[in-house]
Image (cartoon, one colour):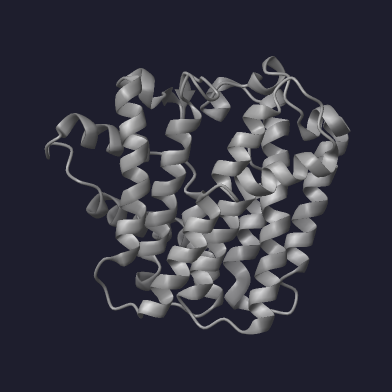
Length: 292
């Protein structure tokens, strides 16, 4: 199967599973459920694709990966809704549409984010022929990645760092929490659904560290070079907030080179593995040329 076909099939699986997991838009309270569905639509579905790719590498059947893929996407959607709020990054555009608090209202956005987060963990505990040990691995990975020592902590550091110049190690730590933690959790959850050797687990950990950092550096580059039309969100906000970025610390050309070097590191981590890791490799190749 080509990567394009693989990606289309996994996205179709995810979209169907996500639709089934979310309450119908006309279920009461309908306004809240419509907002949750709005927040969950669109996007690259990268984190879910990482779940499927890691699961492929570990020999997990695709239908065993739908639940963790949905849970990761729900957490990601929640994080974007809250990230866009006026008290946080205060943005009006997300995925090419008005942010949730603009399309609905601020209170609904807060509640929708809360509900998306709790639904993610409910999904991981519900139904299906999955061993409880696997569910515990999923719950531990996702909760750790979401909490104060993961994505939420990274966001707190990010907000506290506005109008400051961070050192490069401090910036990398910020983004390993804010962006990298959920990427790493996605990969770990995919592995947990299959049978991963110690060698594969260690390789995927190295892959995750390089992939997550490369992705964030590319975000910093695109924030400078991209447009609202290409990105689906407002560019240039980091400069307005005087945030430290890889571009501000390294320069544009050096930031691009650092991202490419990390892509090479991610691919090299999989050198000992065969076709079972092809989807993981292809996701790195796709990231090299991303424009959004």
